[in-house]
Image (cartoon, rainbow, N blue to C red; front, side, top):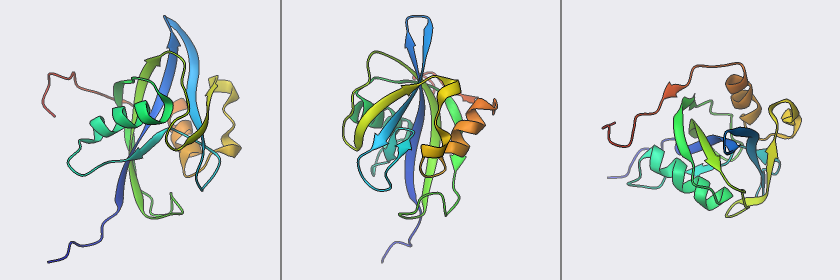
Length: 149
């Protein structure tokens, strides 16, 4: 019996970078692979993996930082959001400290102050996602690691 074709599942994280108590900016990557441009770091969920585990793993692989997930911004599922395929993304907000480094699918890593985000260079629907975040869309608080999801 073959499985029905369903959308691919991905996670993205709006990473708020901090230096102690001082907010530095938002981490974006310059994509190594098409579509090229700037993007919120993220990637595909692996079989047998929880979306929150995928989000944390992808941040370590792509920007070299341990990210503490703070909440869920939303689920973005427009079939046209990714030119490669129908990809549904679960978008988290997380905090990190340290210096990001480009890894896996990232050509370079950039940190932008909120007022300097270059929306015209963002790929996929990441401009919409970041605008939702900046407009104060509600963030569903992420449960502690000891809570069952």
